Length: 432
Image (cartoon, rainbow, N blue to C red):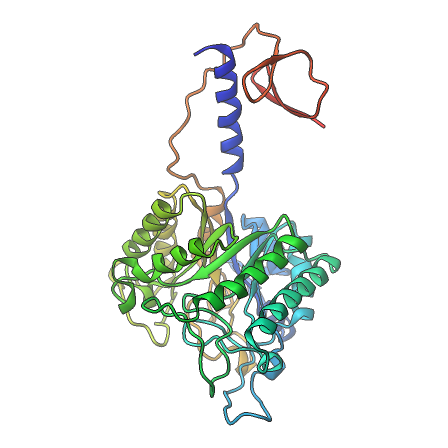
């Protein structure tokens, strides 16, 4: 290898390693302020009191947190103009003011912030993607404009509050589309087996992603889906629903950076199913990053609605939860495109007198009987510094007597005066 080619190879190899060096590990802590307000005390696994859960998470190695955003969560339980209602949910409280305050705490702690925009007043997932009450009478064109203006305004306010997101989800679990309409109306869903409403979804996403690019140009855009199971999701045989969705995104030239996935083994099946989904995505969309933006596993009791159990491999225990976490990380590290792992609702802690905060979730990273962190808490954090299966690069580091500068085309130049990137003595030199 001649010296120019060698130096360029070295620089590019180092650049690649740098670009892939940071993995994100953390969780969706959207409810943390409510627990703090209720006087919940968190403890380390060894029983030491945690004064600030965000700071402690950073201390043990986590480097990112996720927060959800609802349009107007106060509208979730009532409507004066429609015959439908749904029960109150105190966990649906994350309006923009909430997210600004919590997001700033995350950023001030030196962590990355992932913003999960629901584009709804309540939970948005494959079973429901209800249009916000205030937007219900908008036609498709006006709705797309509203998505743009709402997204841009929310991001601007977050930036002004010191809570600029580093990653933005334009929708939550949108495998079947988003902003379907209202429950008593004609729902505009996007089924894998149909061509209906995909044009509409594409227009909505284009407006959402345009707002992100314009307002937070450094943020990565995530498209979040949950079709990762071939045994538990009947429309996803051979991962057809999953690949159909991202093929549609190609067709409509949707602008995004990251494929976000949900994976809960008690709903989605064996770890091998997620492994297969990621393998499909890496082959079909090699230029996209992949993150598991939601996961979880019980430490004591089954999660209500569980459809798949593997308690022989991962018992419902502290150790079983840690084994699941370790196995998940080991599998993810086989995939060079995967660079993010987020636990959903890790801060859930029912060691409180508030009934509304202790009603159902059994898969957090704190034991509700003691308030102590489970062993999986620190296991999750280790993902941020774990290594992938990227083949190691062998580079000759012996010194060279060549004193020349080279541009990235391999041409020798005199000491550079123009702005750009140059190679000199096996090092990357940036001239501004």
